[in-house]
Image (cartoon, rainbow, N blue to C red; front, side, top):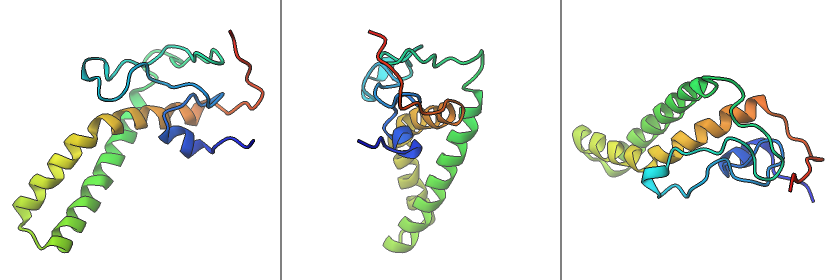
Length: 126
């Protein structure tokens, strides 16, 4: 069976090496522990903290995704529904607030997928 590609694996927030385990401990709606990321993969043992400050680059990915999301949302809402600029801006801010947690996780997932290659022969450590 062919495993999903890098983008699909990043979207599903899976380990970049084995693509079988999750990067985060808790579901996204557990707000108190929303940022808690595993230190190693529970399936293959891949270390998710490659070096101190590793996820600093994920901030830039998050900024790019958020910016494009806001721009596209703004223009779609503004011209599709013919709303005022301030009303459209408010709706876009609400949408960004709703998807912020996923964007945070997704940007970290993309960032680690850039640096860790997929290994189809990754073995279960248990």
